[in-house]
Image (cartoon, rainbow, N blue to C red; front, side, top):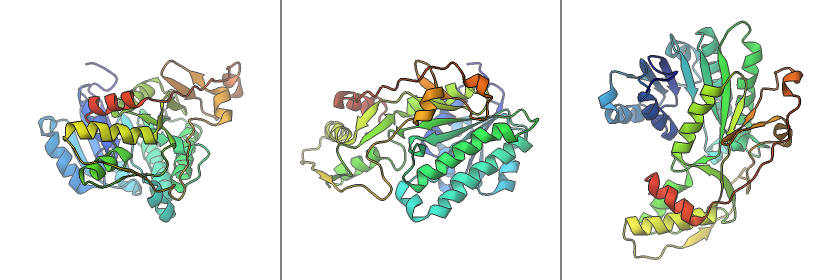
Length: 330
């Protein structure tokens, strides 16, 4: 398929993660000149290189850390498009190691911005999180700061043409460290499924939905926007029951699996948000997503916009089971 990525050079930062791998798998179909996969995990690069061996002519694996500006500068030489997916993202890890989260999520993002401007990259897309809205934990606070850095880059880039934008995700089903792999392991190990709170609500999307949002947002970006997918709401208790049901069928499990409530972890919310009230006032709505324009745009560009009406749709257990089966997450 011919697209904006055909015969172009692409850098995927954090490319060995769950979303990174799926993004690379999708981008290969667009026949780019090269995809550079940048991460600090040597073992995952080895595994991914083996998994994608049939595309070895198009892929290059670079060991590096977003904290290292000079390494990023080299990685971005002659690059057209950058997808910045690298982050410290586990809420407890960020709570107990806050400055490490700052160095990766904040300083690392600023390094990406500087390297992109210096190398005249066409577009940079940053992946954020719904936890950046009214943050109650270090992870959310660092992602909010990184979002603002990306939007502000439109102001600080001067005469350079690089376009910076962000996408705001909810939870991605089956991603590394998410609850679905944890639930599955607990079930197969004949342990209780542990929940922080069965009534906890989370915005959730499948990996396929996440990749589609990334690519569509990057195509639409003109500078400084935050793109937010219209994500359905999932009750965690329903998700646990759906995982138990699908795992029981897939693995012919006969032993009973109990659900154990363990309470909220430090910094954790019961309910997440997609946008702040101020963002809703200026967001543009399309059938699939909301687009929050950069606050660095002129005020005249933000006038005459109707308040966005947000609608939450609670996903049924049947739909959750359908997603788990379609995405082969269990």
